[in-house]
Length: 253
Image (tube, rainbow, N blue to C red):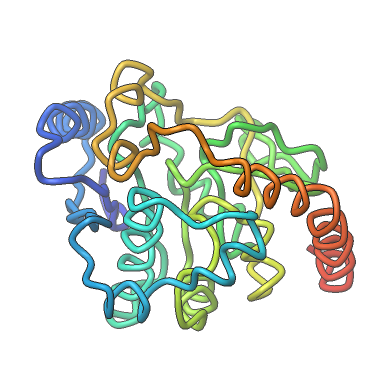
């Protein structure tokens, strides 16, 4: 593809099958990509963890600490935002390494960019469909929509430099990598999605993720942890969601 944007694929060193899958798909689509070494949350020293991740903020937003794998994912995405800012990269496509490109993705990548320039981030895949229609793309091949509230997945999205700058201003990782609404509240990040999604997940690869296995809990939570989680869900989360919605509406997001 002529004049394609940078495409970054987050990949752990041991995930060779995932990297091979991405290489095969990209070659078939006539696209090139740069591999970004994923951060292994287990490798962080106590000082690095304190410097790069805020456990208190994560507890506030999610009612719990982030696992090693979740911290690694979040820091991996933040690594790309920093790269975009440092190198003044105007826009880029960011993939995790278990995605599957649907046919003709490369053919209308330029149109996705040109028709969404009033947004910082464009989701190319999400676990939830956007609810608020905005407009059709000039070709009519896809619709641009936004979300009223929650939307999750950092598997595939387009990021622009203003969005990377906004996210880079957050001094440490405060929320999980795919909690875009909370990021919008904190930074004013403007998000949209295109429907139908041009990206899906490779289910076989998604079930075998090195990142998600890092630090995964296998034990049953203690009674105190369950009690704390229930208190957070019943007393804290409703107020957080109320404040979140007020802030999103006040910013027109």
